[in-house]
Image: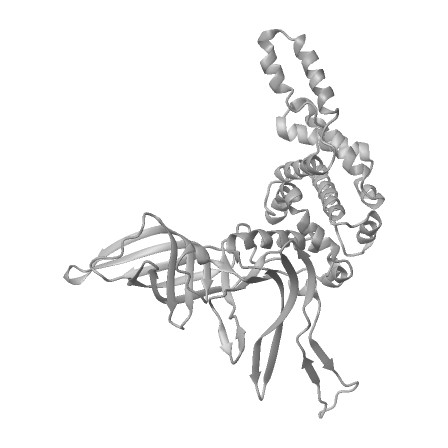
Length: 459
């Protein structure tokens, strides 16, 4: 569950610190920050059009706050006694940083970032608790529970940053006579060699989110983000520490009530990856190549209310894009294809040549049928056994894509609808997941073993 927090305090623009407002900020992960400012001055602050880069403030409980990429959504004025006015400004912000003041956009960077995703604790499945229970309970029975913070786990190194899983404990609560509580949290840490801008981290967070959603078999979302900045540090003797800065980011399609996913239904847990860390490294290294395919696939995963025909079209296009970016994308060598086009155009009446030449622009690319055949040829037998007859599966996919794209009534009867379309979408999803796993270096035999797990569903 995503928590909503409120911060009341004093707010101002960095370049006009002497002109301050009273106001309240409401933030939650994934949503726009909402700031309401009130002033009782006769002449209020003039805001730059409807947008301002930065608004900073001090909350009543002593926290520094910076809002980044702020948009004015409402401005109202009311007259009160003696001709004085009360002005109210309402803003939304795309970013909120609690624990720091940024006075210029160029200063917004972090030496590292830590993210908690939904179901990350079940995925990590590593506990620092040790419990000793007696074999028999009596009125004088004692129960011993010990806690030690688990060691960090390095997942991989990619270009100039490391990805590490770490653990923290919070909510230490002790009521000596009745209650004791410690809560452990799992984090994904992104540790670059030098500080990075927030926008750069967003791409890394997204890539990791997609990876986790893929291997968890259900969508996962960032629910907590923390960062550290060189300018915010505390000294204890010779030791320097960096207090965590809470970061709130507006993210589309975040689900605040995500399904609870158990580790046994996931393709890989942290313990599996510890034995085979190459899959994380390959995912990040292949991100640029796979991004157009991944965007199409994960759009269907993060938007569960998408119409089924749109989901089908996205998945079919994703497979076509995957083939285009990873496999042979031509039927003839370019020189032979150009010779073929010249021969055709020579025999075409001059008034039609321009039109025909434009139509032949992509004529050397494989058809969807050929692309699907190439992909299926590389799939493990366990996957193909689920799709059924390969030729029939490909034929149904092509006819359905052509119908939902062109609405040609002549092929409507050959296209999948209703229950058939549900199964077809399921098979296309299975095919795409298989493609992603293979790009991560997972072998066909390993994929067959994953499919054979009793509680894992790749569709």
